[in-house]
Length: 184
Image 1 (cartoon, rainbow, N blue to C red):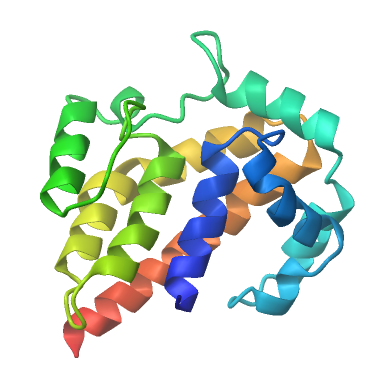
Image 2 (cartoon, rainbow, N blue to C red):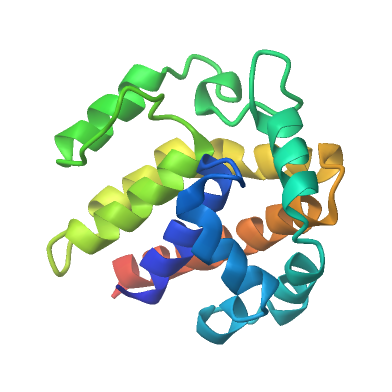
């Protein structure tokens, strides 16, 4: 697994799964113990240290639920809520056309899109970056800045207020990498 895939998998998992999800226990343990920074490919040590200091499980879960869960959530995690005319079906069709296995859950969730980027990176042909570029350009970039800004503004915990700009910076770096690869 390369650095691009690691970034997408970690960020996607944090946004997609509720903090109390047993699958996230190892990841939150790495964050809490300050060990995520050891394998984090970007220079974001200050933000990772802030995440470490604010990794209270109960507060994270309460803030996550208030931010992202239910009809009354503060910040919808779905692309279709942010991009006029966007549908979940178009994202599902794109990911299915690339062979990505999907569940019944909406495919246009911010976390799902990052996890999809990891999957596409891990399962694409050696020099195929077209799928990733399309995913970023059409399905992620048009709304992720606004979405992450709202997360930062509406979060009550330092963890989510820090994770939003950390994700924004990581997505910008990954997009730059995709653009550089395209130019080569």
